[in-house]
Image 1 (spheres, rainbow, N blue to C red):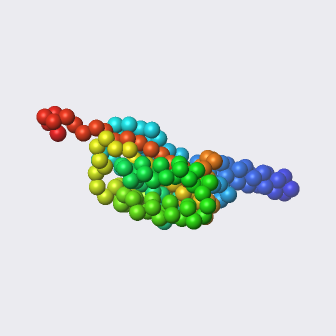
Image 2 (cartoon, rainbow, N blue to C red; image 1 turned 90 degrees about the horizontal axis):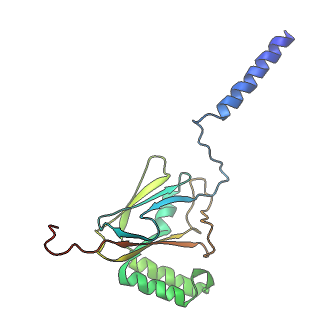
Image 3 (cartoon, helix red, strand yellow; image 1 turned 45 degrees about the horizontal axis):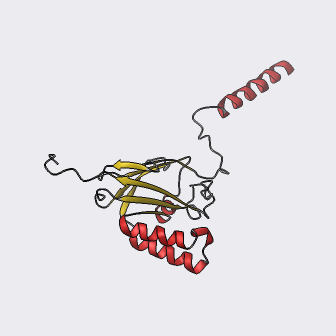
Length: 182
């Protein structure tokens, strides 16, 4: 009887160990910070088609509203003016609070509209701009990681020393030559 209890107890421990190692488990701790694993177009990409969308993949389900509210997409001359002003004031981390508030209001005013479409796991999304991008134009995607949260309510940290703001830039394709059939 004592041996049977030991065998049953041992089997229970083995079953628990096997179940905890199963591939069906989410494999994430609620203590993890969300991270951006991949973004396309990638930083520095060139000749990006004007009919493109932006794809983002995260390491966990995200709070979709915070991603929408604290991600910015802009391009062209207004974006360059904003970036020049940002450089002039020493970057987001070096500005006094009044100047930073002004910069956020400004980026809001030049942001391109669009819609986010999320996968069912809420760990990747596509941002579709409301209109085609312009030919031969620089674009920027900016994340305010101070506001972006995972579904676990942990804040995003991208591992950069930039006061919680991180930027990705890309350049669209040139306009097709006249008579090229486009």
